[in-house]
Image 1: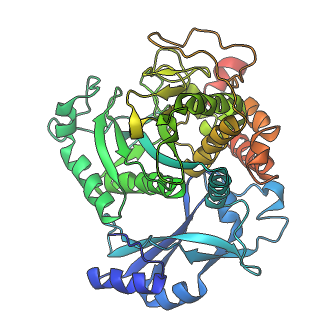
Image 2: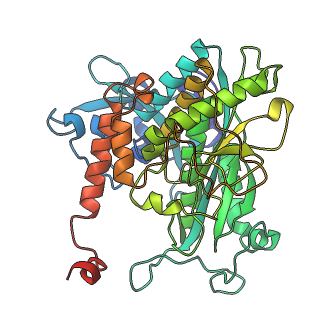
Length: 459
């Protein structure tokens, strides 16, 4: 289990009493693309880890999705690639059930080696600062994430593509979509059970498992928590759990937003309620509808600026296709899955906004930071949203001119973020430009060699 004590020394002693066989500990931080970077340390070095921290390159926080540095804003290159020091985040010691050797894990809070200050570009700090802004305004978000993904075969096809994992019952891939099918959940019950067991062991509040529209596609829901940073940590660590469990059984998973062109994409849906200092849902108060509408309007006003975070790579934009219950505009509505910002059925403490734009491969920390910034901007400025789209598909309904539009492609979304007028007031001043440089570097490397299809066009 994970522990809540504030003293890492005491936590470790308690953890070791329950797991005396532990031989290694994975110590890692969360990078700007949601990847985890760090070291596997022998348990014999635990005193050094707790007392002095874990030292490695500060640029790990700004590596691209492929683990490469791009010298964005001079970090990790022109600055001489200095080390940072990772301190154990309280409450994050947990076992790694799928590891071949008895292994523990913990999250690291990365600090400047000389000053001890948090790295300004650490995604966890970016989110923390946004949450502090909301709290100062009397807003206390309660958040949960839902993650969609595909279980895939560990071997690629002859042309390098992926395919669904085989069913143990038939020794072949699933042949038909099985949305909401309990039979499919039973077919993969060992996989679902292993995820649940590992998540429980790590203190991750995973709850409902759903078979989705795609072949071998699933969704795992996380329970709501009153700490957005913890919610983002849960989503990031759940990805690690799902991937680890899949690989232990000889399969793999993908959180790509659109891994198959003929199958539905995978999203990260984020549910947000706003509480007051007493823990009461502001959306359900006497003027709660007005506050909710302003929150939606804030999300609409920041959609174009934040889209490069929600759709975090060139491939992710393939997910935005009509008639797939994926938003292709900035509409909102009640109990309508075709809109970007859905108000699910429910009232009282459960009243919330479901943000449906982000792909499953987006950074949970940065996506949440952008969502909460938009909500705060809307509520504090009492913005007014467009008319809700209820009872009909929103895909073909034009968005009013004054409402921010979704960028047509990835490069345009990065430009919109770099020129942000609202998010620049919530993120560190240089962060939008930093993010753009990292993602442009990733994009350039991806297309550094001709793809086979290019010859069909340009030969």
